[in-house]
Length: 269
Image (cartoon, rainbow, N blue to C red; front, side, top):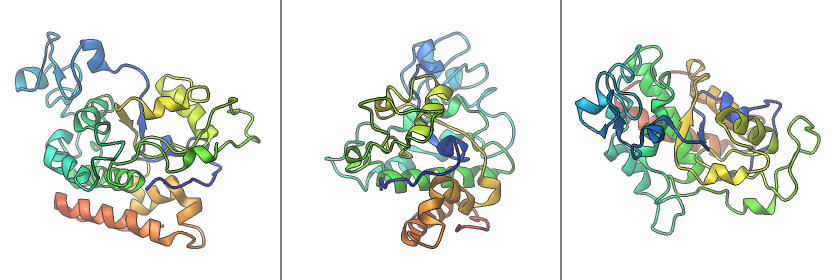
């Protein structure tokens, strides 16, 4: 669920976490090819979903071939994050949810195509654990892909005025938005710079484009390390919000079971 975030010393807490998901503000490779989300751009520049489009030579989108099967890891992310799996998460929300028509599997796969390292380092089980952890955090933060904006977030602008490197812009609020509820000016600023928009002046962009991106770092240390990076100040220190931490772990274990893998060690923070 969309909870407020306590400031941390990490300049880019959300991008630093191995499974951080942000909303991309600019056009992706698939858009440059002219394909709709979820379609592959073939070597000849045409859009489709069969091997002729997503196989060898695929330029962008949920490719299976030369760009979609490099390295180790979990193989094709699209074959693991099936429509059934993705829609199974969304099935818990209601028609009133703002994220019902926003969070889409095609947008997720399009973004993943731009990050070939996602779920592709280490063994097949390692890759699946990364996917499981990724969706465990997203499920928790958004209430099963229901929320785009933090509940009552506009009542607090989440401005850390002491951070002069990423100063707050007048009239803007830096409350939780997107699938991992990006919060605080010192996260919006560098996140925007990283993916191509002015995060301080245009924080709403995070909640307007459903194409998502991800990065990799903490999973080798166990799922608990990703909790520390995501929301350690609230959930890991002194047990202030142990129930929130436990909820994340339950989702992670649920998804590991679905993928048929051992969840590994160091599950809690």
